[in-house]
Image 1 (tube, one colour):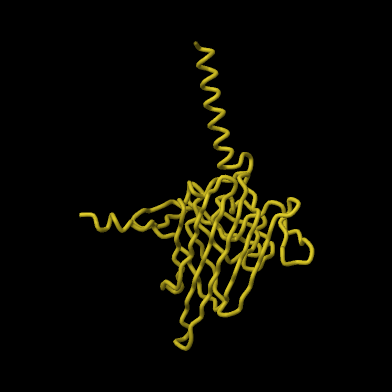
Image 2: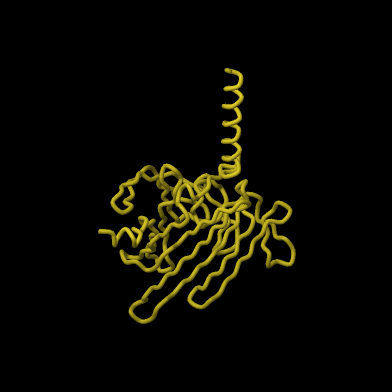
Length: 238
């Protein structure tokens, strides 16, 4: 009986490990973002204490890949003279072992359009629009910030430029970040290197809580995770 019990327990543990490997990617440090964010996360974008737009993450875990859709929209009134708008949309595809397979980016910077297309070819990330593969790296995270392993990186695929940015991340300590009515202990990082001006906050599980950086005019832009909205059905319930 003990032998049978041991076999059953071992089989159960093996099945659990295999399921975890399919979801996480053994040895890669890749954690499914659905366990951190659910299927969607919404961030406000603020400048000088006023909301100027939003940043949204959407996650779709499929059998053979993870798809992440990112979009940001900003609208700024400049000196009461004219409006400046910025629209950003990106789509990432990740394999189950935690490697980026594809990245498509579309940027509308007040009418100036920029496109980036990057794909994995022969186990290297390449810029597709180039005549030949311009290798960018083998295992790179993107500057869309949601990945819990980002503060551990020395390089990053900069989705605004389509280039690789060097990092020199410094941990600046623990801080309390307010998320709705909840106070969350967060770790504050300065990304350093090519992104020296960018500061980012993650909770103890690796969930990205937001970032801060300087705009072209020197003002500070703050991106903050918003609490989950209350479903309409619950709002209307007596």
